[in-house]
Image (cartoon, rainbow, N blue to C red; front, side):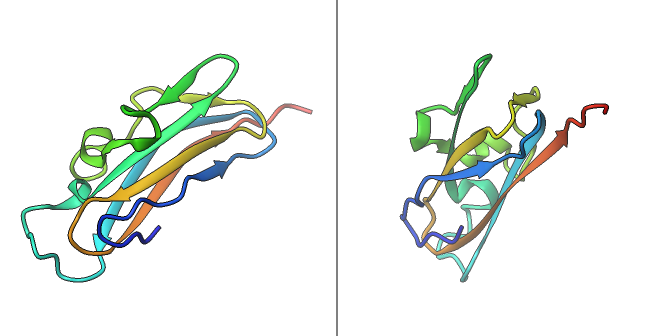
Length: 122
C-alpha cells in the first residue's frame, strides 16, 4: 500500500488457501517516500491499521474496528508481531485490513503474515 499523507487506503482482504491455516503472527512496517517534515514521527507511528476476521470459533477486531489504531500500538514501534496468540483460519478464510497514513508524507507500507498451512495426511 502507498497512501498519500492523510489518506485512508481501501479495505483489502488477504485470502488464505483452501486448507486450515495457523497465522502465527502479523507484522507491519512502512518507509516514507520522501523526507518527512516531522522527523520525530518514526516507524509505526506513521500509520493506523485495522484488521477484521470472523470465524465460527473466534473473531479478531482491532481497537476501533476497521478504523484501526496507531500501528505502534498494534505491532510495536518497530514491527513486533501481532497477535499475541495464533489465529486459526478455516479453509478459504480471509482477513480484512485497512491502512491510514497519519504522517506528513506518502508512505510505502508492508503487512506480512507468518503462517503455517496445515497439510492433512493422505
